[in-house]
Length: 213
Image 1 (cartoon, rainbow, N blue to C red):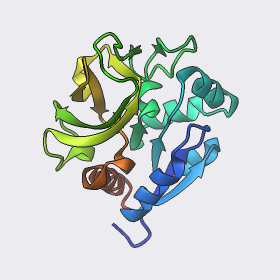
Image 2 (cartoon, rainbow, N blue to C red):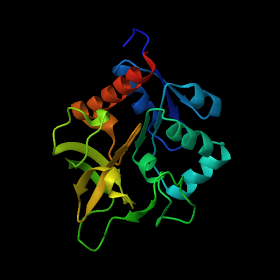
Image 3 (cartoon, rainbow, N blue to C red):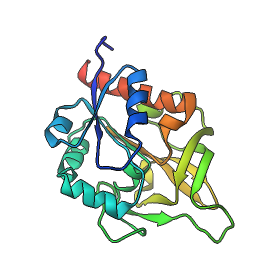
Image 4 (cartoon, rainbow, N blue to C red):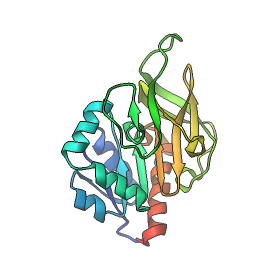
């Protein structure tokens, strides 16, 4: 990696937690910037799609800011892409949380964690991720590593081949997906200590290998 590091667009659609993601990416040598400008996203070496909040209001924000097409184009065009928490859920067709269609990058639906099993909802705190797939962004992460979660819904993709990690909380759910240039996780790497930072570091390395930054 060069001294400058690759540029990474952190998509701003009023979904929170942007500064923590920005700091984590800076710590591993990237040049992150927070933006809702489609051209800036197009010009960046990589894209991070973070998020906290509700699917419907977030999709409305994405549409209002003209960000739906840039996100889809980044993924389809092979640009390194990392989705976080809601940034995983919004990749699917839709959510039981509301009525707005999702981005439709992955076929499937977002479902509610079951309340009838006596677990506290939202699922908040540290939990294990059992890896069931490989990807450069997940390299060096031991199976069963703990990451920090805050969510009440989970992604349920139709194509199980993209599922790269699962977690149990009353039900076993998809906590990571990965394919080609894209990875998305239900947990928050920026709140997950050394293993979370490793994910950001791997992401920056993936970008560097692609663009030679």
